Length: 421
Image 1 (spheres, rainbow, N blue to C red):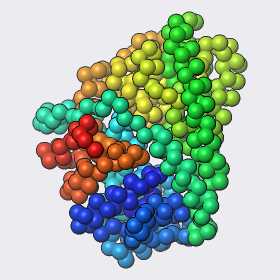
Image 2 (image 1 turned 135 degrees about the vertical axis):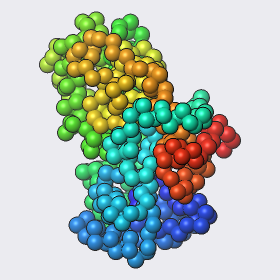
Image 3 (image 1 turned 90 degrees about the vertical axis):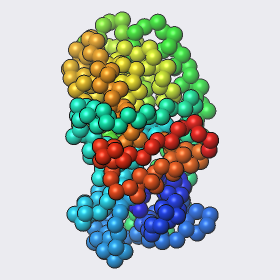
Image 4 (image 1 turned 180 degrees about the vertical axis):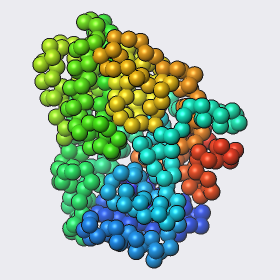
């Protein structure tokens, strides 16, 4: 196991794998990795990597050979230490288990083999192939719970993780964060966000109310974190500013004059990218400042209920728009970028036209995901982890990956989300 989500999930996953008979090792790259791995009970088989980034390929190769590793487990597949380990594991024919945030988040987690997001097998699967497999399955996917969220736990574990790295990282002097800013700045941003959550909640309520009660038709832009792996690795944009300006230019050129444009920030946006400044400046320059709004995170469902269209780079939140039958324009590589339900129109024409998705095709696509790569549960809340672990270990130990298992009629039955925890 390499790096996992902030918090105790990887440690608990390792305990469950050991109970099933596996031998599990963890390579940690900083004090945060170490503390969450060792936990309260001093979990063993921990290997600290305190060397330089340029030495990692040689050390990785030595570990894979000396420990006779058969499986590689990691969270996300694009950070440099993970990409190198995947390259070596693939050359050796090892099984590669990749966890990610759910493609149908927030009630599911993504589990795939080999790669996720733009590296997922879903990128090469068309809807016709999915339908052919579903025709032989006959399994009913679980429904999402009425209420479930663990954003506060996510922010808390992120702040705690970066505190450990900032304050106790003496053992890992050569550690280099994969997100391009210092650990101290990362911790400051997490802590600032945690402390400002009450104020942001009030600000968000006021801004959202203004949009809902404005009486104008609006289009919704789903912003992402500029440092997020999906944006960096699978997007045509070098920065969030480029995407914002493109959206505003398309809106100014093509949208009806009575329509408005609403930008919704990612729930974990921490201010490291100048999103609001870029948005306001470009809107004024294009003469649409009075018709442009910015919302700092918040619930997406109510906004989608009144939106005319949705635009994104490759946010997984776009799946909620498709679920509601809204016209969707996406610019990056995404697992849902299929011609049946993502518009191919230029952006100015997209704002002016009703280019709706094929809802029958999307329903089949969604069911295919729920029967394969989407596991009920979450990484951050204790209840979410308990639900997730019930099925994750079984899927990891299976001979087939989720997509092959469904095609062969051996997919694991999905546990109901409303089961007691």
